Image (cartoon, rainbow, N blue to C red; front, side, top):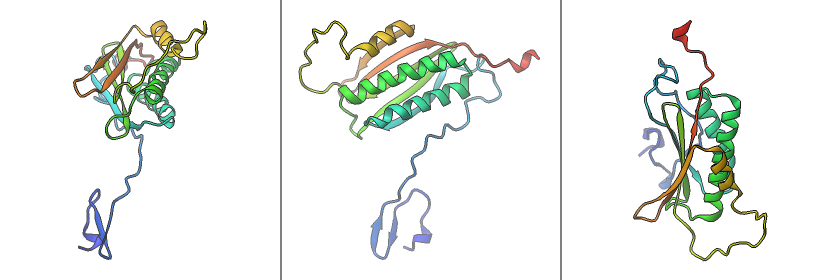
Length: 184
């Protein structure tokens, strides 16, 4: 097989040796769903989903992803985007720091919307083994992210599946700032 005979995404054979194609990482969002509709009339569903390497760098990528995705698709104001960014970074930080990665070494960030609500889910491989001892410090470093989520989000929770994966989620109310083209 000649390397020119391969198609994108296929392995290439060069000089008798196997060469794995190197995919370029991308944070491309693609077109928003139902471009012809305004944010208020779009149907509920998944806005986006991305696998992030379970490393500290995932936090920065998650913040950028949530801001761009929700900003382009739903058009909320900067204050809501700031809160979404903050809470997403807290969830991803917690996952990367305190949980096991999924089998493929990632955490998954999913963003869903329904009407005027956005739901952000972070799925990891479940809790690490070992016992955590509560701190006697009156202002502990751990746990502040959950307090932020409780103060800002309208709802939050955690789900586990039978394979051991865990999903932490939160929901926020969204108001679109984009003018409705049908009104004028």
